[in-house]
Image (cartoon, rainbow, N blue to C red; front, side, top):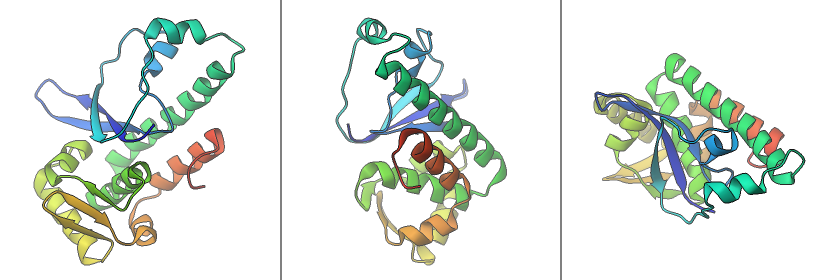
Length: 186
């Protein structure tokens, strides 16, 4: 209903990277809908919020080939797949500053406010980069007047500027969610 969950691919050495985020636009139980009983990904609460919980057996009982819930979850699965695939491409092709801007925009969308708690260490973990790289990227965005950051407190000062600083990946994901789900900023 509010807040944000990070879906993280965690490696055996303890390294990891976020592969997707889920806010009030979606759900974290897609594996159940898709017929699996588990997932190799780790879920981390990123922003405080409220969520609804339904036992897997109750979700399965509510699903039928022609139900509105099944149709909605099929559409959401496609939007989630686009987000996951686009994040993979982004992590391989774009610089840390662009990726950081993309991530901050996605978090800003789900926070519903301009300020939220975020450590540079956590952002580095989410993007799968060294902490020093995040310090440089955050410093760059701050020098440009797009954000204000102090000791774990992130404030988005210029959303339009942050969108311009981001790679195209943020817009691609937002456009797909708007097209498929009728939500977000198209």
